[in-house]
Image (cartoon, rainbow, N blue to C red; front, side, top):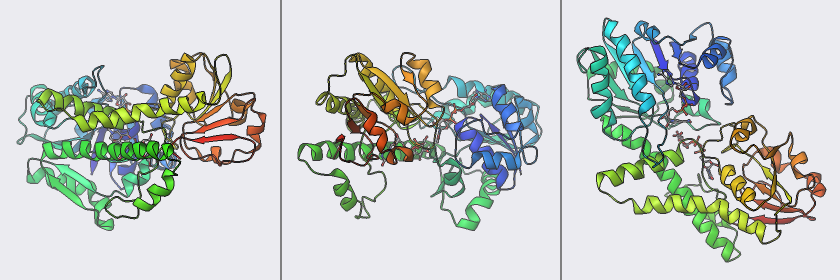
Length: 432
Ligand SMILES: NC(=O)C1=CN([C@@H]2O[C@H](COP(=O)(O)OP(=O)(O)OC[C@H]3O[C@@H](n4cnc5c(N)ncnc54)[C@H](O)[C@@H]3O)[C@@H](O)[C@H]2O)C=CC1
Ligand SMILES: O=C(O)[C@H]1O[C@H](OP(=O)(O)OP(=O)(O)OC[C@H]2O[C@@H](n3ccc(=O)[nH]c3=O)[C@H](O)[C@@H]2O)[C@H](O)[C@@H](O)[C@@H]1O
């Protein structure tokens, strides 16, 4: 089928390439000319394993990109993958997505035939019913449910494994009003994915689909804060929290996944989604006390890391290595990265920070912290350092060995349990 994807960032570019790979003709629309040029040149606009290969294979064939929203008129269905960032107070900022919806609505005004707009962005329950549908009706002059429809289809892919997650999902969620034409188009869109793998499809209402996305992310973030708090308590009692996690993970009701404790969860979504849901809950008159604590524990982890370093060295005026800047391995994204709090803590202490990440994450970090020395290798960061803080679990940090010998004071505080303790270094695990 002919599909348009509006927004070709982290989600949109992988979703567009994956739908093309599933056999659809896809046009990716973005206002960023650089992204459009790269996609049309067969290049990935982001660092994401497997994505360059898919884009190279389909660009110029089933995948094309444009800055012109008018292209969506030639498609049956438009997937919206626009950003929904946080405002200062943590609440969701709908400015970009609402502007994008107006662009879409203006094209729908001219289009003949039924069209479905699929909201893939993460939005607070009720947003599609109460804000998006009226915007589309006003911009198009048409009636939802008659001339066009809006469905909610949240995305559960993780950065660093987005392509694999998209092509092998645990579930697919379709929030609709129950309109048969809309469901038929969603079935056609997802059939090449769900039928061969028998993927569970959750057919639900739009508000429920919106909430399912938050519940999924906030539950996982909460699970991490629980294991981080347990890890902090383990450290007090000289207990290895990873042994504890391995044992409790054998209980199917707990499950082994998302039990890696350490410097905490970051990323483009866990922080913004927990904040947005807390803010929305408060506005609705409900105090989300547990979720407040979930965020509180998370914010405390980088501080604990710095305090562990303080126990061994006074870092004022000394070089300290920060290993890893991306919020997780497999991505160059620094949104919500714990490295920011770690760097800020070190700069506050008057340390000279030498930071390394294997991806282009350093370029983005340099805009925020220009005084940090961004170096080209972990070895270079460690050379002459009076301490090393391991923030991202990149595999290459596990392979570091003799590099620690070049440190001026070999104190390693590991926030991800990626470095092996060894003779010659003072090793502190954050939660073990
Ligand atoms: N990043 C992730 O892994 C995941 C993100 N999500 C959700 O998906 C949504 C998108 O997130 P990201 O892809 O990370 O955002 P992003 O910021 O990487 O991408 C958004 C893209 O939309 C483009 N854009 C902005 N206005 C436009 C317009 N009017 N017309 C066309 N393009 C426009 C921007 O240039 C940008 O390339 C968010 O709601 C997020 O919460 C959901 C699951 C995973
Ligand atoms: O809405 C989103 O954007 C996405 O958010 C997360 O995906 P993502 O943030 O890309 O990556 P995760 O693997 O979930 O990691 C998030 C953070 O948790 C941390 N984490 C993860 C797992 C773990 O055991 N311990 C741990 O500290 C990671 O280091 C990272 O900082 C969810 O896992 C996806 O399902 C969701 O679609």
